[in-house]
Amino acid sequence: MQGNADGSHVWFDPLGLRIEPGQTIRWINLDPGNSHTATAYHPKNFERPLRIPEGAKPWNSDYLLPNESFAVTLTVEGVYDFYCVPHEHAGMVGRIIVGQPGTSPIISSSSQPAGSEPLPESALRAFPPVEEIMRRGIVRPA
Image (cartoon, rainbow, N blue to C red):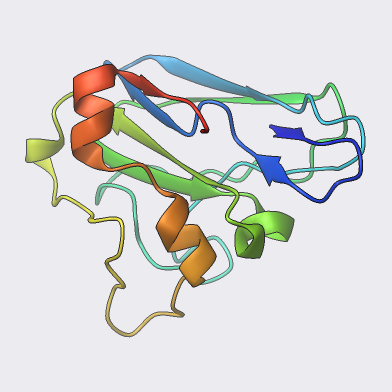
């Protein structure tokens, strides 16, 4: 979790990552001027659309102050999209692929699940493509 000095730009780094089932992900707030969250897109989190594999446990870090961290172990294979609650509209989102995404429905960067609150366009544009994460293993902000 990072941001520039005046708080006008915030981001996750990396914003795309591929891991194996059972690995633990840790988010650390390295932004000295903002608090952030790492929150799975899931109806249990503020009635957001499901953008993690069915059967996977959703997470919400709550607000992390500078230098605080949060970790989650992901075991279900598939694509996991997450966001920062106060900065979703600024495009602060990320994507983790666990194992092979073919074991769960592929979420396209622009897909909007039916019957749910639509994601902001800025968030949809920020997700790295699944194919790029699979090819590179890690995708950092441009």
